[in-house]
Length: 441
Image (cartoon, rainbow, N blue to C red; front, top):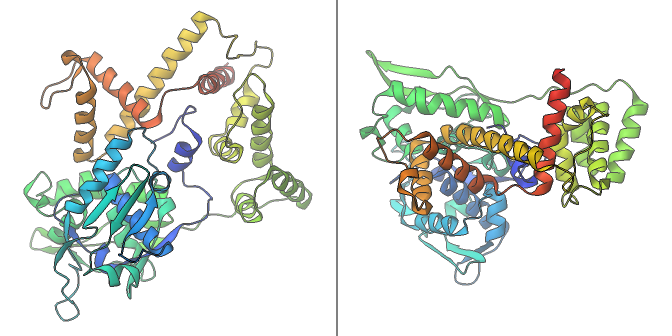
């Protein structure tokens, strides 16, 4: 999903593959190759990885409890909703989901763990989550002999639950170049939950079209690995029986800088801005000096503009400006046009901007909704209906909604996902609009 100029710093950075340092942890193969009794939601799938990563980084107490602040969970999984109650309910429900573990192991090599919840006990006081790891799995989780390196900076960007499971599966075989052939029914249960073969994905062609292909496309767009879209399919007669994925590391082309003096000037400017040497090296590897300086100047201009709200996170804003090309848009704007300000926008002009912004938000929310799995869509619909007092604006399964109900749902989804627009965000959106209009002349 493409983000929008109004989204907060953290939310925008969670959408784009960035140059931020990797946040890798070792995830045991026994857990990666497991079948949940029901499909995990996207939030639960990310939170489960967050809990495992936290267990590596922080020691438990004398009673075996691990602890993590809810604010850190929000950051690690990219959860940007203000609905903290929903987060707590979804994570608490993880304790009720049991797994069949190490399902791809051969009978000779398998050491049966049995069926158990990964986190059988989870509690919260509203500030922190406390949890325990299954006694049967604890040694495997904390000291894995076989594992895949999983990157939380990648996981938090995924918008499909199946993408998380397929990414983990393929990351396990990144050094081999191809995964082992996996039984179709088993793999479907791994990514969609046990019993998924009885539903709409019982036929492989639908699983491939609606789950595998979109997930592979998302993984290739976001992560640091590449999965060949042409899945290697084993057959028994006309029936597809096994799947195998060809996987490789993504190679980012290095940007060649032509002028050492420009590099030195840009490096000095970014150092003065407060970026680390490692960050500067990554930026210079992937962006030209002119792009970096333009984004830096644009950010500093926003910081100095007394009409705009003070930037709370200038470094994140700088990366947004760089990724989204705001400096280019700003340069293309009509310099003779009257400046927009929070106080200076006329009522009619402000109304037009707000209407355009709502239209933009609905379109972004629609793209986001369409990218979700059906189970995740149903969760959002249920939450929307619960808070919608007007029956005519509620969504009914199997019934085509009226346009007004669709618009109300998409605006609610946009607000739930990205929050209410502030004055400065509306101003930023208006400036982008003016830039586009000027460039189109």
